[in-house]
Image (cartoon, rainbow, N blue to C red; front, side, top):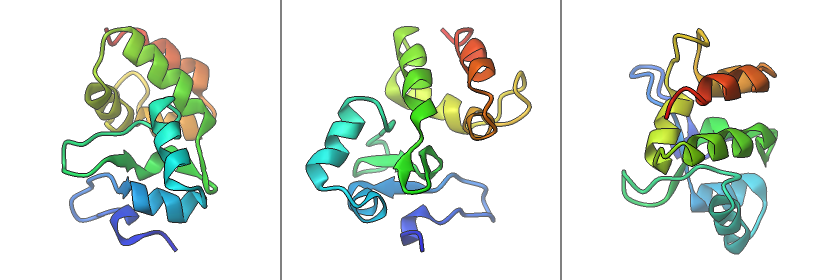
Length: 120
């Protein structure tokens, strides 16, 4: 079962967020390892709503999605902030016909990264 903060709010269609304690529980990793995953951009994180939070959609099968890091690095290399990169990853993109995260989940990594390169 997902932590309460990770449950998707279907009424408002807002993305679910995971805090560091949620990630410790979900990934079964110590706090230091979670911070390292964030620092090394395996998990995109923001503080805009208070504590450090990661979009829940960036975790699959109890692990950070491996496709996220490379895509996040493309966006950051283009000059986007971490918050701007997160917004791009979780919001619908017309060129993809879905959110970039959903496209990554559909094994469309090359297409997502090609579209990401136009964001800078």
